[in-house]
Image (cartoon, rainbow, N blue to C red; front, side, top):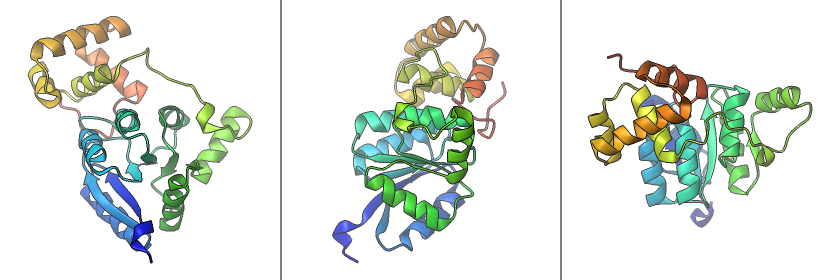
Length: 228
């Protein structure tokens, strides 16, 4: 195999055993090389900027920054990188969101190694790839097989990238000082973002913001939330 033609892949999943399994499956293909691994969405964005992989295989439910927002930031920072979502959830709302944000494909985690490798190759070629179960579900929901690039659903009321980051960290139970530390901004700036969030969403307590984040897919119930 000509190594010059190898497809470089970065893995983003907060479970080490999942990343190890994906690495083993993909590198067994010969034409695919895993060049980096990220355990949080924030780490995924930073690594993508550094490594410029051909494809990022991205989970949705990750701490500090979810896969939806990580997808948006990577697409903006490294537009040539293709993003393939690999999630345990086949919910139409998640599919709509990530495709709107520029993901090149969506697979469920029950996908076989053969289909995963096929998906990596096809999105690398500029194609859109969806799990067969996802395609069937969308056909039922939309009445036909829609073009993912034409979808425009967005559940949140025009939150900025920074506001979405702050919302996730608040929903994960982090105090203002912790949010400031993670994002590298001042506590005062965090407070302003929190206030802006509450105004935009018409929600005026942390519990309400957490419920909203869960309902909107900013965090998933599988993400550990600290109760204060």
